[in-house]
Image (cartoon, rainbow, N blue to C red; front, side, top):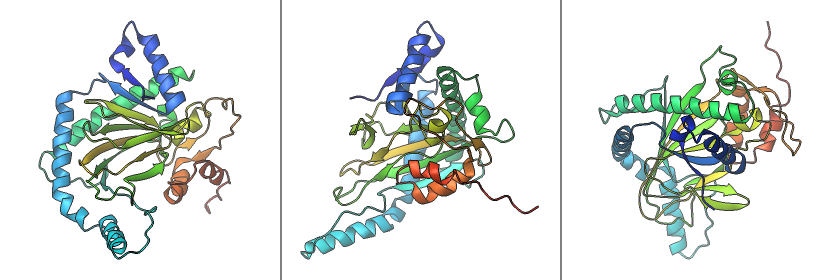
Length: 312
């Protein structure tokens, strides 16, 4: 099985219908697809690679003294003493930081801020084009997903970026790169490493590589798209395996509802008859923060309960 690769430039041409069908298939059958010819200049992507890799080099010594490294060292030492050891299941072998419009961004390398501002502006536009394709495929009015994410225009959808590196791991049998999970938010656009693999998506009970592809943007649907689509589009389980060789770079941007936005199905429930609740996205995030690596269904159940009204 191969994650679908879609030529996004054909969305506005004679092959529009076929391209829309490919997007629908990616959303319905995989929860993942890759976009090529997406309109983001390759020169900009090369600059993003450069500044993010340089940023990690400046952080690398910190990772070497981090809890995952210390924990793995302790396990290896215990094993060498002849003790039985079990793989770690509650931490990830990754170095990460987040940037969004209200956060403090790294000032080194000097070109990081300018490059990432330019990149994020392009990614936000791409996210909105993808959601408009989803609107059409779901039979919704154009802009319906954006409207839901913005609380019917009262707020800005949240747009955040997670910059990750997965350094070489000497014992990938003892720790995960990133534990299996579904994403909490809406549409995730990932600029992954085109040399070092490790990202896998769960499809029909089988873990499948999201193959590195130069210049591509990987798109996956989060829990909020599953709810809005009434279960027609599913948020997919995915994980990152640690690698002995290579230093995997991963830049994930999240086009999410505003915390104040109310989310509920905009499409009738799918053939499975799933009933999704109506809730405020910020309440869902409170639950997700505690249950990220657990099944998503209990998260939906947890936000069904009515919230007490604040005192007047």
